[in-house]
Image (cartoon, rainbow, N blue to C red; front, side, top):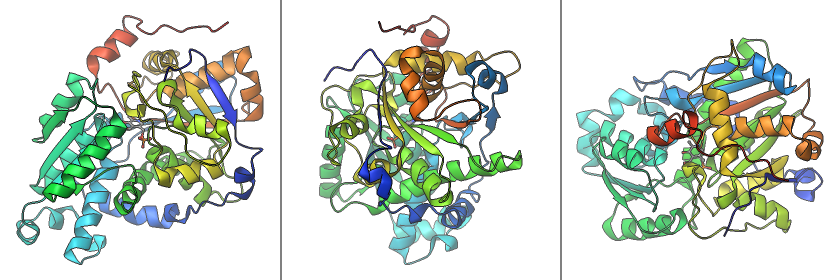
Length: 411
Ligand SMILES: Cc1ncc(COP(=O)(O)O)c(C=O)c1O
């Protein structure tokens, strides 16, 4: 299906889903996420990623403050995804061993004694790059194997980064969602462990654990904001592929700011805007997008919502926005070459779309209704997540240096 050249949006605030906010978010209470961070902090490469403040950009755009969580620094993997794979795999192994995750800090988990008890295990997933790299990285830490499948159109840089971690990598000639199904079938035949970020019928534990692992990112961001005297953001923009990341951010915000939850805007690539289309249909059911899903936002190129994320976003999110590729290209340039005095952030195609979108919402008349409906203005404290760095360095330079995907002004 073709995407639009325009930024399209739909507000969710008038719906019965949003009024009732029925979806359960209790798995994302901060006490629970704190315990998960205890596990992460035993991994030698763990440290909180920086939260950058961009006061000059905020003043130019007419909002109170802009904070960007820079996940290019996560575990040396150039994206946030290691948080999910490491926790989900560790928790899976804890269950298999009849232990609690608190008994399996990194040095125990990676010990010869545990390897001997487990024997050889093969982990598998479908990924557009970042999640596969995170699964391969975790498997290597454990001395185990990883088999990673990637959808057609995958960049060479992304597949090579995964192979460099010792995983077997295969690029399939099908789109992301089809590859997820093929991987699940093959894993069942071969006795491999599926580490997929999207839930399937009868397969919900690992996807939930991945989301809970990701939640350490939101937990750190809120703590870092508190460290500079800000109790909470008023607005959070979060990008969605299958929605595990966005579902986590939304659930974390709703679970931990019950009285005054920040407004959360869900941001998608227009070639794979399944949450936007579902909200537009308004029947409460997921609507899928098929075809090649050929967006430069590779991590967002998923046409089928994860069922766990779907209910959370339908019931709690403020608005759904569908963005053409030029929106993220502008975001990459804004973050990479900021206003004087603001820090520079290297943000890749799936990382920068929210920064690009914020700039368009605040600077374009044709989006003034979205600005008003979400009450973005001079009192707003906006939190964004730059979820990856230059995971495809050739494309990054082509956009930021050479101006590929220039800003397009719809008439
Ligand atoms: C950098 C980046 N950002 C955002 C996402 C979207 O995450 P999700 O598929 O959970 O919606 C991905 C997914 O691969 C990603 O790699």
